[in-house]
Amino acid sequence: MIVVLALVVGTLYAVGTYLLLQRNLTQIVIGLAMMGHGANLVLLMAGGRAGRAPISGGETAGFADPLPQALALTAIVIAFGVSAFLLTLAYRSWLLRHDDEVEDDLEDRRIARSRPDPEDVR
Image (cartoon, rainbow, N blue to C red; front, side, top):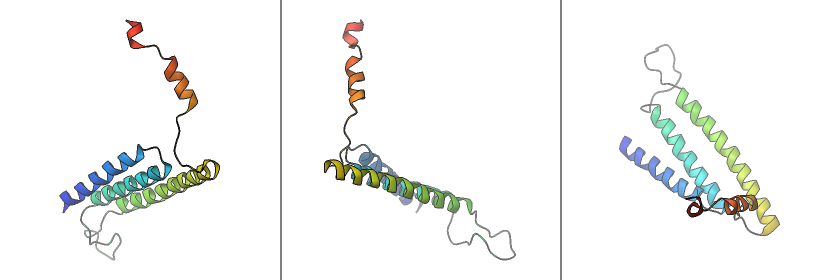
């Protein structure tokens, strides 16, 4: 079971990274969400076996560690906030330009053009 979950996490990270490197904000948001789900699975796998309640009466030997669940909840909240921010940027870009493609920065282009050619340096 742990191998299947590891493969699922690897697939989520691979697809999320691919989508994160695209130019459309919609694909970037989807990629970020997939990577967030992968992170949540990693946190839940770190918590150990499922089936035990984090808080139960009396016995201390049967307690599960609540830290992975708390970290997963925090990761969900952070991913939700970042997704909401990126969706707002995509909506604003759509309103202004009817496109959600991220363009190159003009300053970056100027700096890239002013970089000396490696053939001239030698």
